[in-house]
Length: 372
Image 1 (cartoon, rainbow, N blue to C red):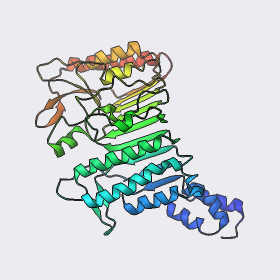
Image 2 (cartoon, rainbow, N blue to C red; image 1 turned 120 degrees about the vertical axis):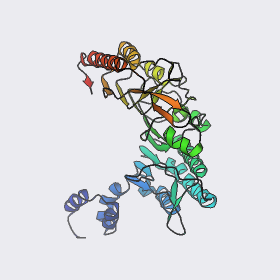
Image 3 (cartoon, rainbow, N blue to C red; image 1 turned 60 degrees about the vertical axis):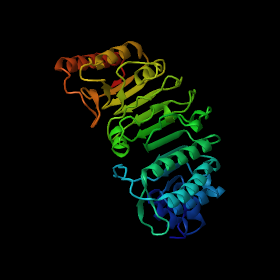
Image 4 (cartoon, rainbow, N blue to C red; image 1 turned 90 degrees about the vertical axis):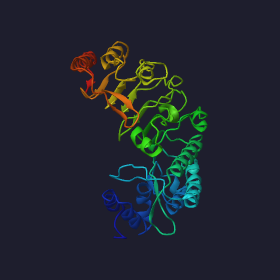
């Protein structure tokens, strides 16, 4: 196998995907190493452990390997549901050491000349360096580690070529981070932020109002950003502290919102106006399981039909609308249960919402564009 023609080696390499197998092939001889190295190191996975972070730092420090890295994925865990553990342990020393190693690693992405994408997945546990066991993390230390890594990656973005940043399981702060707002020359064309739901945060913090602004991790206004995804996959997300009025991206083409709650009264700081502010460029809009907030059961709902009509009249550049009929509802804030469905909305309201959404879709379809 060591003496096979280069062309045949290339065919073999193309059929191998597992990193461990690629590393074995790479160790056979020089021909294999030259063919396998670009594939092996194009996408790096970093576990939430000191050893893995140190390995990553070593790759960054090796120019012949660093040149092939195009995507970095931190702490990917398939089919695992996010859940904040109870505050029942002291992992400060171990977390402090892990944070230091991870910070050095992610600040080093400036040494990756072809980096395009970084994915940060935050889970409230880590692999202990001494025992090799997974250790649940104090929630406050989890948030502190999140802050530390976000700071490190934004430091690296100052001179990096990366264009895509995806953040998953984020607990948003009440106010914007200074290191985010100060990055005025953001290189990003796409950002995706998946946040921890109100219900999960309130269970841990015993507060229904601790959630921060959706804009906390959005880059300052710039002409580079083209795509935004804001998701709360495990439940509704709403923040009374949301301030979006200062954000405007003149090249924004796509916006995806999932489980995001709209304010009862439209304002320049709200999501509804944020969408309209990009009416000249926005081509694709997707809403999944979003809801309108109602202050109390005695207050009339601000119907989705009103929003659909506004957007139909003003979003003239829209070419694709993805909204499931009946998917957008109304919610109340309960002191004990958090955000709950508003059960007193009449059938006529939902029928009007559905009718107005269909008119919106028909208007877009008349332009021979995609409607889902």
